[in-house]
Image 1 (cartoon, rainbow, N blue to C red):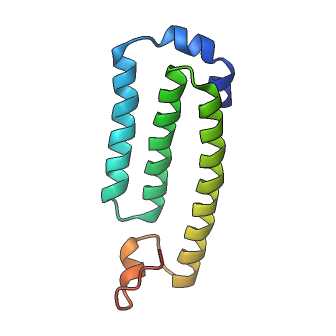
Image 2: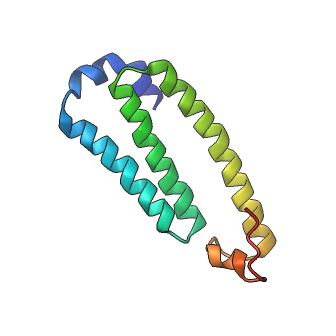
Image 3: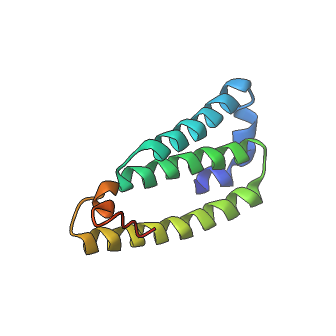
Length: 111
């Protein structure tokens, strides 16, 4: 991602076209949709990251370098926090990453 931000001028010049805008939007939409309907916590986090990467590239397409750099930093901070919380929850439940594992005991869902 840093290389894309560093050379965003070339990136803007190369990728002018409705096809690329459509592919960024399609990536964001489909990754968000797959994350919403998946039941494995690891896949939900991975699809969420893919959606955010599509959003970051979409911002680079319009030349918003400062916004993209800020979004990338905050995304990394919060995503690492989510990974740590997910690991603790899986450890405490002694199970896999399926969401149903967290709802076994009387509908208990820790988040």
